Image (cartoon, rainbow, N blue to C red; front, top):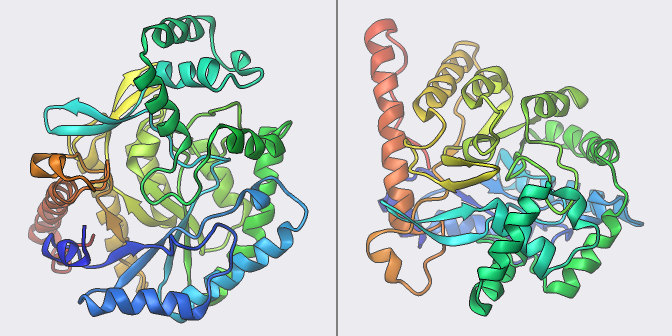
Length: 392
């Protein structure tokens, strides 16, 4: 998908990163400016950085982590020099967001899917991670053993590749040996340990972001429950409250990912959108359909397990509140994220699951229509500011 495609689809800005740089390397002013100019030359702007990755050395409190934290601060300074005010990041240990299927058939095309039984089969019987059995109920382990026995070699190889290889936009790929080498430093790290490490990192970088006028948006864990026996700290309302309370600066906020939070069966995502609205700096308006037992697949943007229109209502109300208070950053940037692979994109050799042009264009059109309808209703009843042109 080209920049011209994004503009034709109606995007008013681009969400991007310096994917060619390894995790932990400091971004230079020159590298950031080169990428900004490339986007500007296409007739649009680099609106949000997603992401400046947090390397494993920071997450595991490895020797030399202070240098990596210093590099992160330098990267923020480089981003600020280009006039970009929003940075998304995550603190998910070892792996980024996780799926087990890149082509799950749904009526609207092909979807990304996470199947808990497939994941357990990979963990228990393909990777054979030590002590993995401790992390599953007897029922899940038994179902995973049956699933694994039914898999042919092609599916086993595909499943391991999907679980260990980077998803679109990822920067780190593992083979099996690499995976276990990267996993080893996490041994023995508890939930409390990991949260303390996160707070140490955030306490250093958030004041720099605040000084630079950058809003940091922590992306929730995806899915919002532990995998590979590793702690996760950003998947529930209670955890997000703790994140925001730990460093009470305006720069410390959230990327509100409806799909990530929506995969949690106990999460009331609409209530969370209302509660956290003042600290939401960026939104991923994608949806999932929960299947039970931790499994889910990417749904149509307005058609999943979460009431997306109610989430948009909460964000529109927050933007209106910010405008009334005179905030210069009243708009919450939005991306439709994770569209279905559909129509003639299915046959394209380089189409990325979740990142194809048509699926995301369809999602963005639906989301913008919902937003505009809500704003039109507000105009009729309260004479609110005129609807904006939309964001991507």
